[in-house]
Image (cartoon, rainbow, N blue to C red):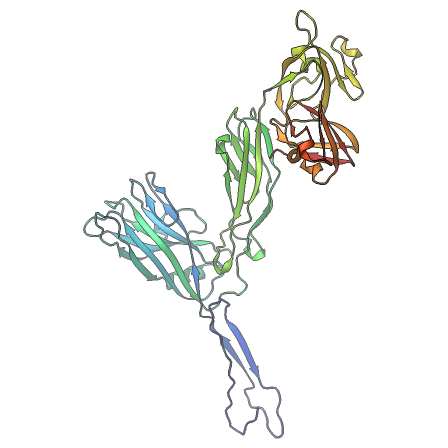
Length: 504
C-alpha cells in the first residue's frame, strides 16, 4: 500500500447480510512493516466488530392452567369447556441468550363470549423454571392490561398484539447466574374470573429476540439414554412393579447442558393392561408400573426423553424414540392336547407346579377303572412307563424346552394346567439333530418363528410327527409350514447356535 506522509487509506471489508444467527465476529487489522524512509505511527492496529443483527425466533410450547375440569382440545392454544379458564401462557426457554437488545412478543388473543363492555386481561411474565403450570401469578411481573375485542353471537373475533418485553426479558437473563442452568419463563395472560366468557384463546405466540452475542456454538443437543430389558411378569404379581435403574446412561447432552431438566414421555399400545401406566424417572432411570390384577397380555411401550433446552437455532430437545415390551403372562393356563393312537411328538407351553410325568399326564394315567391310556413317554435315552414304580423310571422330570414322544391307546384328548412359559427364552442347539419344544401360545409361520437359524442358513431340516421342512427345497413342497402349540420338533443344524422363537 503506497502512501505519502499524512495520507489516509481505506480498506474495504465486504459483509454478506444473511439470515444466519452466528453471533458477533471480529476482524483485527495491523500494520507490520514499512519500506524506505516510512515509519509506523502510534496506532498500528485496529479491531473491528461485525455485529450480528439476526432475530432469534422462539416458538413456545403452549401450556394451560385451568379450573373446574376445562380441557385442551388441540395444541394451538384453544381450550374449550363449560367452565372458564383463568390462565393461558406460552412457555419459552432463554438458555444461551446473552446481551438481549430487543424482545417482541407477538400473539393473537380472543374469547368466545365477552360481556359489554369488553373484558380486560392482565399480561405479564412469570419465571416458570421448569414448572408445568402457573400456580401463582402473583410472583410474576405485570406488564400491562389488554382489552379483549368485542364478540358477536356468530363466533369469536381475534385481535393481534405485539408487545415490547425487552426490559423484562433482559432482567430475567441478568437474574440468572448460570445461563445454562436457567430454564423456562412464561408469558402469561390472566383473565378476570368474575363473569368472563367460556373460552380464552391464545393463538400463534412467537417471541422475537435480537441479541448481539448469541454464542455460535449454542445449539441444544438431543438427550440420550440406554433402555433396559423387556419386562415379563405373571398376572398374579399384584401391586406396583419397580425396577431400579432400568434406564441408564441418561444424559441431557454435553457438559454445558447438565443442568437441564429431563423428563420421559411414555405411551403404550395397550393401556388396558395397567392400573398405573409405566413411568420412568428422568433422574434415576427407575421404571414403575402397576398391572391390572388377573389380566394378561402384551404392551409395547414407546419412550422419549425430553430436556428443556428448546429447539431454536435447529436444536433438538427430544431423544430418538425407543420401545420395549411388558408381557403379563397367565399364572394358571390349561394346555389342551389332542393325540392320535400310537406315538405322538408333543411339548409343553405351560409349566405345572409338579413337572413329574405322573403328575403332568395324570389325565391319561389310571383312567377307565385303573387302566392307563398313556403307555410310555420317551425323551432321548430316558423313559417313563406309568405301569412301573417311579424308582424304576429314568425319566423323572419334564422340561419346558424339550419335546417328548408319548404312546397312547386310542385317539384321546387331555389337559395340562400350569403357568404360562416365558416366550423369550433362549434355546441352545448343538450341531446335528436337536429335540426342542414349542412354548408359544399360538401357531406361527416356521420361517418367521425360526428366523434366527433360517436367515443364516444354519438349519437344514425340521421334523414334527409326519411333517417336514427342508430349507433347500421350495416351500410348496414342504408339508411343515407352521409351528403349533403342543407339537414337538426335531431340528438339524450345521453348527452350534443359541436362538429365540420369534413371537411377531
